[in-house]
Image 1 (cartoon, rainbow, N blue to C red):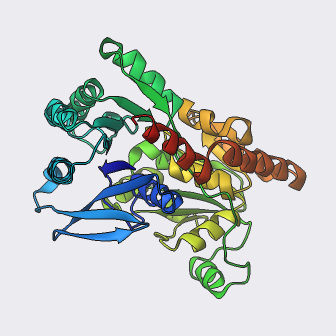
Image 2 (image 1 turned 180 degrees about the horizontal axis):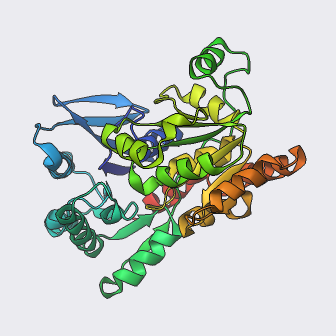
Length: 386
């Protein structure tokens, strides 16, 4: 029996973000695999334990201490892991840490887990230190923390080959041991029918119609290039709408309105968030095209979901996105006029041309990014310690 302790997600079940979905899917696909027992840290207001997907979910009570919560949470969760491993005499445990938040504590836990006969695996995520939402001191901390965690890990599991190359190029002095396992995606259609009342009601509320809108889904932050996408769509001659499913960020929204005056363009529609996964999948399927402007990070969940659902994908042409989609998408850059011209060309594509892109996208997901495939790769890596 291989025990795997996962620290760094907010916990399961829940649809918070990439790490949470990853842990949810990994435990789902391994729930009937008797070779593994998972122990998942869950952020909570109260301590306790429960079972989900046959995983032991242990709750860590985290005080309301602002931005330092995440570091406190990871440290407390790792202490809980070490105590459980010691008290239950668990042999050769894997402690898998998601993200590089706790660099100053990395050496301490590396030694402690090794003393217990375990190994430390780390998922370095994307370039967190580059995100515009962080202040300069926080970005500096992220960068230093990343280096310390690379140094004090037995294996770095990178969800992008670009991230894996970056780790080797940047931290070669530590001779990092790395492997590549991508993030996953569902390779199926939504359970909702085209005439499902839930879908039709949503369309009516948002003033949208099937195959007559472009879509974007993602956090409303500057590095996801909402400014470029909105500005360029406004410049285009498209008769379609641009539906934006995103989180609330009033300050950023006001900044964009001041720059772009997008409220004067009826095609630009901020439609809020959609947490019903089947409904969101159906909205993706029925979009004419999907925009992806992420340029920070590794394999992005929303990109994989788009390739698994949406026929036509228009992606920012950075290395991460090209690595994932290859020839299953068309690419744009941030030069003025580039995306607007691409939108006008995309509107003129024949049904056969759009169908060809869709077929390539589904094939790409099936061959390299299905959750079944990703779960099997993790099973291989977690078994290597025995």
